[in-house]
Each structure stands twice: as structure tokens, then as C-alpha cells.
Length: 116
Image 1: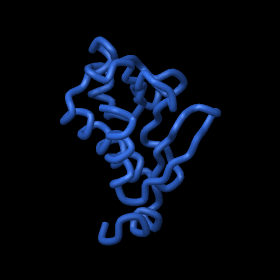
Image 2: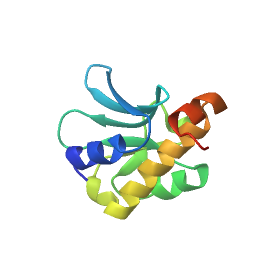
Image 3: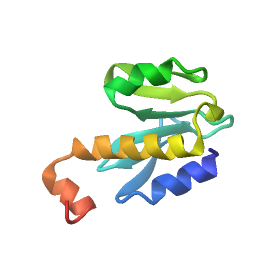
């Protein structure tokens, strides 16, 4: 995963917007809620939300730690891009998007993805 492939993947998800927060973090949002955060600098560090059951499994891997300030909400920080395969990257980012989307109001969900 690179900054470019991360951006390309996230921006294809319906309703995704970008915002710079804290001066140096690029955030991918749906309904103004973050689902993926990365630093603007290299190396690539990425945080995203996971299911509670996956949190411990992922943070047991080398290169993945509980995300500072948001681990209590089951966010992980991938410090080493090679800790996940390309397929896993796509799975976990898509899942984070879906988890955040599900937390939005029904009205907002329908605006973002008609037919839900």
C-alpha cells in the first residue's frame, strides 16, 4: 500500500471526502466522520477502525499497534505497510468505511448510498 493507492481506493467509496486535521494528517471521511487516517509524510502510517474481535488479532501482529487516542474505539495503527497484504488492506479499509457509515443516521446513509 502506498499513499497513492490508499487515496485511490478510499476516494472510490461513495461519499468519501478528505480533510487535513492536526496540521499533518490526511483523513478520509464519510458523512463527516473519519474512517481512515494517514500522515502526509513518509513512511506510510495508517489508522482505521476494526471489529472488536479483530482488534487483538491485528495488534498482535508486528507492525500494527493500538491507535493512540482512539484504541478504545477499536482503531489500529499500521506502522509497517507490509504487515497487511493488499487484499487485507482493501478488506479492512472497506470494513472501516462500512462501520462508520452504519453509525450515521438512516437519512444520511440513504443520501450517501441510495438504495440502502
